[in-house]
Image (cartoon, rainbow, N blue to C red; front, top):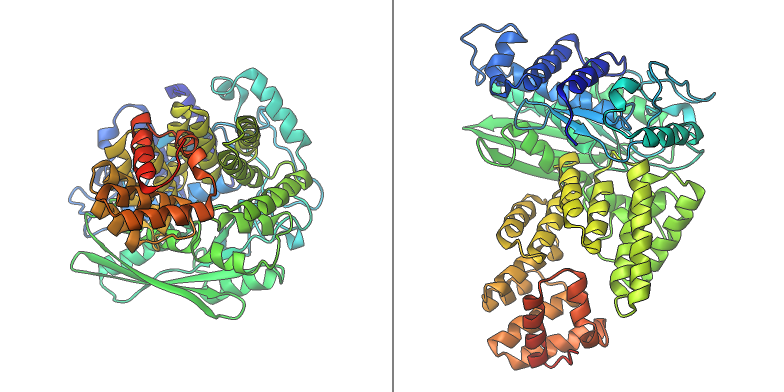
Length: 592
């Protein structure tokens, strides 16, 4: 929805007036300058040189290669905005963002926001709840997206800032405002013992050498990584503030958090050598200092998705630590023994699952349904429930009524997710999934892109988007997105390559398709054997094709009767369905 210039100015003034927007005076001037230039249509002036001279008072001979002031302050600006929108401003109807790789701001209308729309007034939290200015002993609490436990209220839990009605009515229908007000006043505050969300303490990057570029990179990366990590759901992110020492922030977090809360400490070493930025990082258990994981990254200037090396490095590290199936989700899941209980354990289990079998799906749906029954405003739980219902719809394709009912439940669940967790990238990922299965391609694309905008650090979002674009016939676009995303994933999984195999198959490069399947085996998934059978059939390898069909039927008995419906459910074009059906018949599968 377009936003007029007057509204943009009002949103900017309102944001800058918020006491909980933790930006320095000059970074507020930075934000004001780039926003006003953008609103005035002078985007071509929003360059590092202009900002350095007009905002930071640098001389006309300013050289950004020697003086990184704009990059450093842009990192702090992005961190301050991420912190604000992850906490106090998480339900704001319009957000201002400064995307990595440039300095021109974006004004974004948030769908599904739940606001109290009262001019000027602020609502105080109930007794026992923290005020807007609660902090963790001076540390930056970058994000705490899931409900927190009450114990001494360690993490920021803020009341909302409100935008004036004269601005809001232009963006949100009046009926929605009434519902929003009711939703806010009736919304219960966090419940006792709702979760045990883990905390990531990101310590300042340590420069290996004392040259100016390396020192600058250490400063900017120290700002960029907490902001990148904060985009992932289910993780509170804390970083040192001001001159606070690493030892002090770790001691305060571990000392004030409940004993059952898991704490992860992230350390980094960085250097720049001949235009190559090198970073190594380690993740420790904050309780006993045990090393859990380590990694390294190299980024050459001018390469990668981001123009700034600190952004590219931060995205890689954040994906390695917090993306689905990565270190922290996997480590959290290993601590859950047996069937998960409602609440945090259930969500933690869901975050680390790539593929659902019948038994897992049943357990997951049960615990998620109990979670939302206990806490009807748990937006992330509603999102994962929508995901599980969509998967149930897929496996029920033999019964069209049951499949349609599961998809209806998924749509209802994702509406709740959009209402209660509009700040999570996964909310839009699940909304995109539901829209795709419903055939609403416009909403599928819009929400998929929104998920990627909210969390560019998570390659799985781009992988899913690329997969579906390829399925609906936008081959080159989908495969290009997919290849870039797979290359950026720290540890690719076999399913990442399935659509690349399909693309080779579409190009009739059957030997290459078989070779890719053999390099990335997934013998427990029927899709793997389906593609193997079809490719081997085209190559005339009768024995190999027959064996693949045998393995397929061990996983999905009677798949021949469902094959066409399965492909149709995934929205494949009819010509591709017919081609696969013919190849599978030749391999020995009785396709209806």
